[in-house]
Image (cartoon, one colour):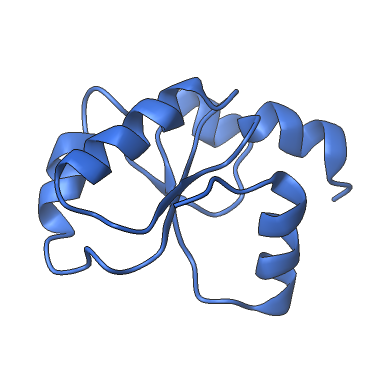
Length: 102
């Protein structure tokens, strides 16, 4: 599945679309700034989160981090576990802060 821009995700949030957001940053990063995603740090909690999401392999899932690197790894982890509709937020929260006015 294609990745998603911050502008597209922001519009979908404003539209009230049903989206599963997973924040793969660390706790302190999530506490500093977040867009409402469920926290599942890449190394410590994401593998358990993926297992708990069994049965949702067809659902759209958007993963994000600070810059898009960790979330790209998270996307691959989801895909390796059979998830078919996982999108990485391009540029992560850095891009969100630069491009979206809140």
